[in-house]
Image 1 (cartoon, rainbow, N blue to C red):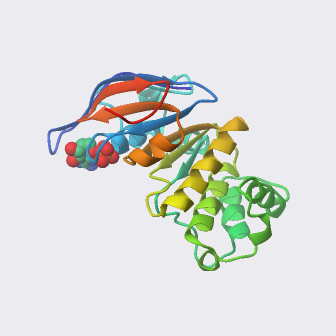
Image 2 (cartoon, protein in one colour):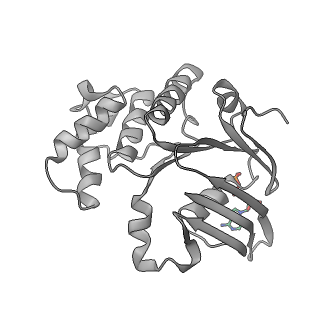
Length: 226
Ligand code: ADP
């Protein structure tokens, strides 16, 4: 689904080597953590997957295509296959949970009963009963669950999560991780970028550990211990 072949990314302005000779493959149905301390290269790796940037050396393959050869005009279609969850949920504050999802469906050209499709996605995260609630009326954990519902409502091929529990207390973090695990069990391919050792240790999945831009471990068994 996604492959990094000998990827080096150097930011020319600062001469920082954000990634060095990185190789890995993500297959359909995997749950994978990308972890490492701040500055290790996690965001750079996500930006390459989202094709916001291109590598200095090497080839990124996205759904079998060389990312460099994907035309600018095709990027929206590419990104529609990727659901994004951020540390800050970035929900629209002035509309309900359901309308937050309908908005995305409308923006991506979906037709039919958008409210119903939104409710189905909210049901997947256990929040169908809160569909009329505004973000401010929801707990932080619930807001993040709505953000996950919004990321999956378009049925992307892969869910990319950037520090998805960064703002949450340990119990709520666990809830979110549990939810991601459940979505994975139902067949969603999931990538979680995080610096949180607790997160990676609490639910074991394949873990790629970056240090100063290099993959120092790619461990199917999971866990953070260096
Ligand atoms: P992480 O997400 O793991 O904290 P990053 O990918 O953000 O790591 O950063 C990796 C390295 O690349 C760091 O040294 C950082 O300073 C540098 N870097 C990241 N983004 C840029 C950028 N846009 N321009 C210049 N240097 C950058």
